[in-house]
Length: 352
Length: 263
Image (tube, rainbow over all chains, first blue to last red):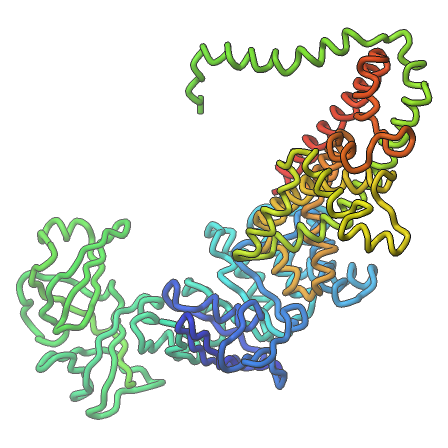
């Protein structure tokens, strides 16, 4: 009923987005900065008008090249990084705003607002003003306010971005609970949001939706570098040979075959390699030649206790997390040739 | 953090400026005939002037609000070359010499003038009537309201309006429940400023409306006319104006502080 279908272009910004969000599912929108994620939300909210194509919710066309339904008649709620609670109203009046705007009586709107505040765990804040709330409280009230209008679609533009980790966790919990069963588009940079809140994920890059599907499929078996990074993996591609993946001529990578999407005999496949499964050596280690890849260091990035070493393996990118001690001990530096040894049990192989 | 101190010699010109601004006011208070103040203010000419000023200023302030507020709302949203031109034109009467403003009104709305002739045809004669006083005051005072409200409307409140729209509020509801309440402190201080400007209006009123006791002779005009013949009345009326002006400034500063805490 409330499936969202976007097939819209903004010519002057080279944006052409094509996405369908099934009714009752939360779709996470991920992608690099400036890729067009917020633009996608604004097209659905009616804050931007497409130059071509259309935006539809259910069987209702919200905008196309000829006509546009104004934002306030779309029943599309928008949550952003700033809660935008009205400073001149109390929390209760803020949450009652949408029911009031829809024509509900004072009493009805108040009951509806209290219900939503209760569900968001902030009924005790009802009489406060926005400036008396912490960031996390304000965001929870904003969630209650957005849902009090019974929106057909909820749009979220990094609502946890400004919050510190503990508070974000709290807000994430409320969102996970309150968004269940609703149709929502959720822009985020956090892989945790994908696992806890979203059912589906769409990757936006360069003004296009480059990939979309169920979270379980795409994060476990990423096919794009962006999703692989988001799930903390680096990807090596190659061709199946005797159950292993040949990532460069004569270089075989052994791993666990993904039962959900196994390698096909002689077919193309991917290896998802977590950086902590890669160890570096100066000399080729003895024993099995499998999983020892000849590599050249491209860069070193300190990350707390470990250093992320970026490697070039036969023109593919691989990353290794090693301790600062071993970086010093081995004297690792960019341009150096090393051997990367990958632990087979931590590598997942799958077909594409 | 301790901010680096100002150089000490700055106290001399700063002190001079303060003295310069305050001395004339103190001197006037010194000249007030406090004993006869009630009877001075009760003279027919003074009562007429006070009453006329009060009525006309209230009327012109209401006109400023009814017409100026919509103009400020439109200008705050407008973009591009025409918007800039509109802003300049709307604030022009602020810097125009009041006599010139009065002359412009006379040329446009006077009995023999282009627009005035058309109004005369409907039996409306503006020049040298109380209505002309209101027109003159509105003309010079409205820019104060428009400029201060427009500034407040243009500062970051767009995200509140967007939020309201996504919550289903129609443009009228957004205006009534979000835009205007958020701009209320600026509207209040702009209204006070406009009232103060209308109250002090002299040049445009004299030029466009003349000086007829009880009809067009407002407080400033009465003070000017009485300054030699009846200095005591002039000073008594001046003190009244001074006190009202001080009250209005206090109102605007209170509201600008309110604005500071909520934004």
